[in-house]
Length: 422
Ligand code: PMP
Image (cartoon, rainbow, N blue to C red; front, top):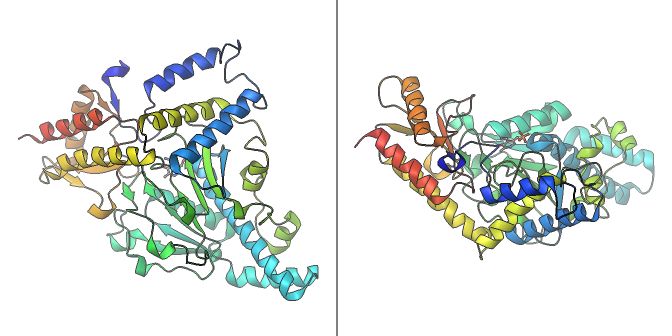
């Protein structure tokens, strides 16, 4: 039964049972209206309330400043790989266009000519590749723009025997001058690599200028405090720490949106040979329509909203409270693994170990495959499920998301020690 299982799956992840029970009721009859939440119009007043409350609760929990917009989108984390390219390249073009207008005056042909030159020589997107998901985002940027515009500022595999598991020193990153964005993935779900903190070299300067930073926080959002003001875009799929699969959130700095930075016209983009993104991936369009440009799954926003309400009710100090618990759970599990280096090999180097996705190999006998199969089977017998590593890397992965209770982490740690044998 549900109460006997602790599920360590990497996403979709465990959701709090009380949230699911409430959502099950809402699915049949929402607030006595006789209609379920998935049946009501996304344009109804009650849908607008659900969206606005979820936005406000997210802003409250994470202390998102007023100069950011929260958008609910639908193409998943992978859709945001493309969305960030379209939107940030668009913003770069608009900035260059505004500068060009000052330089050469209101002559459309001259402006376009200058922009064409700048696109050819200056347009760069920087990627810090530290795991499978930032690699996918980098590959998508190359596919959409051409690799001549995409700068692999660092590739963690080059310092670790062609494998992920470390983050190269900031001083070695080859950042472009005036990049349209610097992109990184704060927590690599497959490889168990998490940035220990916001990178110093990306910090804004005293006058507010500095790199345009975009981060994928799909698998560690809501688990620690983030300096939101250092980012232009933070995005995350809901299905790990926030809610059910089906919505993706983008937190976008308002200076990327009109009136400061309207997206360039399709005509100009065509002239410059740059890609024109699908309208549903346009931050400007989604923001203008309060996330209701097209039919949004209000049920998924409702679940996310309930998870946020539960977090706010549990922790008076909001995300700081959850951060303390997340760190403690990770310490308990890593502690057990580290106590038996003869049996368990941790995949990630210590400073970069993910608190959310704990990846390790089992080497009890001479046959790792047999040992890991055995580990998974015995764990399942104890109600510890979802521990198989990602198919691309193998091994064991314990995803320690917010919905894993402290007792769940303790139970896994005890099992780890018992498996190793005293
Ligand atoms: N980024 C990260 C860090 C992820 O873990 C995932 C999915 N596990 C994605 C992006 C892709 O998300 P989706 O499957 O929603 O496209």
